[in-house]
Length: 427
Image (cartoon, rainbow, N blue to C red; front, side):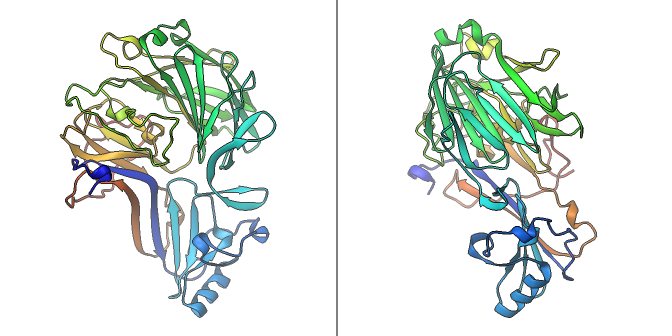
């Protein structure tokens, strides 16, 4: 049965632990990746989940043949990838959608996004692939991100209260009258959610144009074709940090839905967010947030949609959801038939998203949703691939009965992908 014993429709929740596993024919150099220069400083003798490990491919293949168990090749370990030698003399590579480890001070650490005070007036996660600090209150920058010697700072227009911390979330209550601010640490970036709790709060002049100071050390910040900001390294010309165009939504159920309560049970049990808050794809009002960047790149201006923010039929709270991350070749998105023109890039910061068709009262609105994942496999070009497996974890099921799920190869996705541009299975 689904969580809570309720019988639900076909939509399922799928979490972001998607991965591709490929069994590759030996010889030992079949993967074709040069060993890391840091392989001599590996700090752990154990592989993932306590599996046996060896530094080089040859050592791992030899050990796997002797002990009859997979052995990880530590020199090929990455933030979101790992390679195992198998007892039958082949190599098995696993490519994950998101990073599951970070290299800090010369050692690999499992990703840990739980926030804690640092002692210097900020709060930070334990282990992420980007340097990430949130304000501990006062006039310090709201967020500081660092990557490859580059630093990006965003500052709130005014002093901040001391945040309440729980898990990966920092809650800054009443940053404006009737408005809370939530920051969420991610594996490779952060989410930012403004919660506008009433019509009186929505009428605040500050929300007409939300201005945030921006400081990008060694980078120029540009607006992308899709409408979001991107911080580009001035020397290399590549993006160090980027964000899709922000979106905002209210708490209305949508015209196609019945007036019933839907309880979103957060996987983390996060009490800083109310359990019945709708996600962007579960609302009757959804709109993009306009982004402006004055010349000089020292300010980021967000212009919320007036109808969603304070329309006559708006249901509060209203949520405004920018997110920033370090760009990677892997990506994911959701296409919604109900919101056919609205991108749902990286699930709008949520850890999972529904999939399939739902016309029950639970679904607000009734909708058909499709999930798309992009996992790079170019490193295996020219190799003899014996088998490939795609794995996702289903967080909960919308029906007590078995339902079929199909996996298709599709055309590419981007932060502008919507139902209108990607509504068919296959090419």
